[in-house]
Length: 135
Image 1 (cartoon, rainbow, N blue to C red):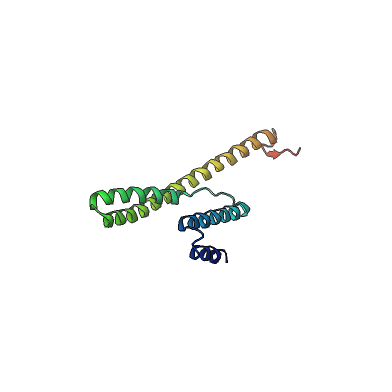
Image 2 (image 1 turned 135 degrees about the vertical axis):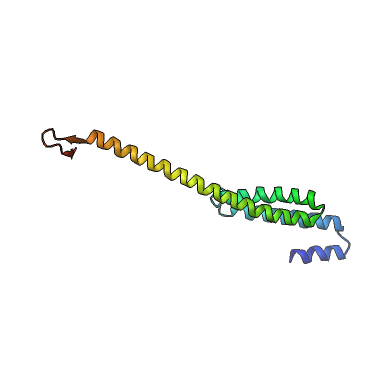
């Protein structure tokens, strides 16, 4: 509706095309900015290791492919191969970090178990039996 009004004003030569374009773009920008401010905010998620590897590998592969292939075709092929390789490397890195985190958690559980056994058990002197003390 508003666009028709602007177009009618332009046809009647009451407004120049530059003014028409400026008004339309200003109104559109305000509408977009207004709807964005009321949109529900999504919680930010961290980028995975696979995604980081794919982005870095793709960018590096595109640069190398563009230089070696001397054109867009080489850049596209290099970017695709680099993204695939970067994804694989990022995936392996994520797996390694998860294994290290699990190993650290296992060490912490073993430390707590050893502390509990050292401070909450009693060995009976005559029978040689270890008994857990109740607190």
